[in-house]
Length: 336
Image (cartoon, rainbow, N blue to C red; front, side, top):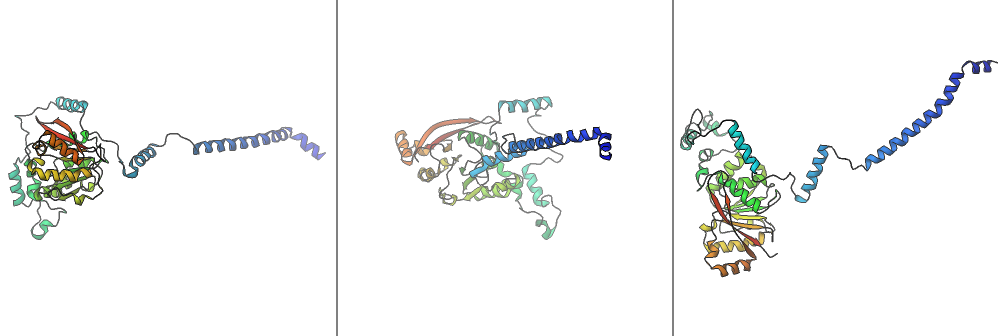
């Protein structure tokens, strides 16, 4: 009786237990199956990765096998870039005042700046032995006032023009390799060094003062020491220090060959053609190619062909900032 009484006194409870247990079991089983299917789909999902993961993948895929690890940079300004800066000048109401820029509170020429640097030890107040102990790379005053920027027949800004023309004509990428013959104080080279991957810019220069300006001032002041360009002091078109297996995408000489004896230029070309990538690599020479034209048209072509070089023609390039253009003569290697 007690058993019957207990059973009859809680029918709802008895019925509820009987119904909820199968439902609970089914629910747990269904949830487990869904979780298994979902986790399996995640392992093979081709869904977009997080932004950081995508960037890492791009950097890995592009940077593999010594390739470029950066997004491709634009070399020359576009028409939109030009219009943007013009609009910015107009919107700010800017006008040149008698074609001169007003100097600061203490206007000085470069010569006056240099005199002050020598008289007052730069801007340092250290005396005696302490005067030179607080600078990692002490730089001569002549370089600090940038006298070497005036050592060219055209403004320093012309180096950017040369870089843009050559880089685009040779279809350069950051992982390309470039050799300049006679890089001087890096008027052009700075732009290549900044654009190219580390150690991908090489230079042969014979002038000690130019090299001092490049190494003691330009590279440190432009924040490019980490790019480790290979700059070699040498002459007589001797390229052995650049290594036997190097292969260049671009070799150029700006206003250099016209100061050399013709036979030395030909010696250099004979050595350089072996270091130029076949077909796609380019050699560019500025101003003139009298070393070749003095031989006569047919003989010039024959001598180039004997080296495996082909003349591609003459091109000109306008300056962005001043009324000037340069003439360039292009060559390529047609033999492997």
